[in-house]
Image 1: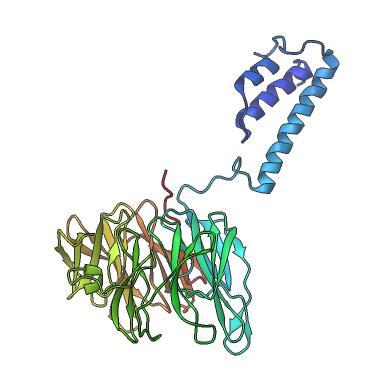
Image 2: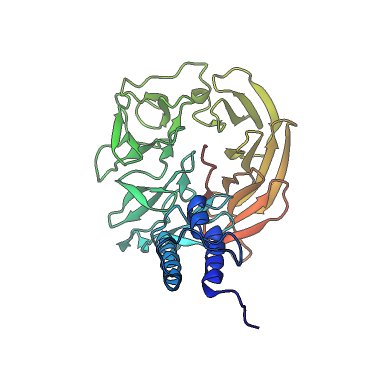
Length: 409
C-alpha cells in the first residue's frame, strides 16, 4: 500500500528519528526549527526555499551527519567509542599484546610481536614480563614489556587505555611498578652488558625524573621488586649483595637510609600489600594474615592462611584479600579472606601453573582473574566468582593479563 504522505514530510520524519539515535550531539532547537512538528503539518524554517529544493536540503544535511558519524568511527573519536562498563582486559598471547572487553570478547591486537629465543634472538616478543601487562592504579595507562636481540635486551612500553604507546623505555626490567598516583613508574635498569644497575623513576612520558642513589658498596645480586611507600615519596628495595637487607630510597635523590626498626615494610622484607586507598596494609607471617594501618598502628591478626601464601591482592572496595597458596609442588589454590568476618575461603583448587596464578580482581570485586593450565596443559586466563562458582576460561592460550581498574571520577 502506498503511503499518501508527501515524500519530503516522510523524509523529514525519518531524519528526525535518525537524529534521535545518531551518536552525535544535536541541538534540539535546530532540529525543532528545521523539521516538521508533526505528520501533515507545515515544515518550519524554510523561508525562501522552493518546495522541490527542500528534499535536496534534507538529503544534504543527512549526508553531512552520516559523514560525521562515519568519520568518528574511523578515527576512533570519543563520539562513538565507549569503554566497556566492566573495563578492559589487557593480556599477552603469541608474542603479542591484546585489549579486549573484560570477559575476553572483541579482542584487538595493539602490539604485534615476533618470536624470540635466547639462541637465535629475534623479537620483539611481548610475552616478556611477570603476569603480563600491568595497569596503572587509575586505569588510564598500562605497562608491558618486550625482549629482543642477542644478547637479549628488554624494553618497557607505556600505552594509554586505547592501546596507543605513548612512551618506550629501553633496558628496564620487568619488575617495574606503578606509583600510587599513577604518574610514575620505578624500575631497575641496566645489565651486566649494558652498564651500571640502578633504580630510576620515569614519568608517563618515559622521561627519567630521578635516578635514585644506591648504598655505598652495592653489588648487583638478587635485588627485590621496589615497593612504593604509602605516601609515594620513597621506594623500598631489598639488596642481596654488598650492604644487604632493606633500604629506603627517597625520590628526591637524597641519601638512601636503613628504615626504622618499627617500619613494617622493612621488617617484612618488603612483603606488604597496601590497600587501594593506601591507608592499610596486609601481609602474611607465621602462617597468618595480618592487617594494620599504613603507619603500623592498629595491628591485628585476621585469619590463618594456607601454606606458601603469596601474591596478595586487595578487592577494589578494600573488604577482601585474595592470595595464592601452595599445597603441593606445582599445584596451587586461590583463597579469599573476608576482612570483616575474618574467614578464609578456597575459591580455586588444584591449580596448575607455569607462571603466576592469581592476577587480580574485577572492577566490581565480584570475580577474580587467574592464569592456569587446562586439562591438556594449555595455559589460559580464567575467571571465577568470589564465591568460588562459575570458573571459566576467558582467553585460551594466554598466560598473563590484568583487568583494568575503575578510573577515578
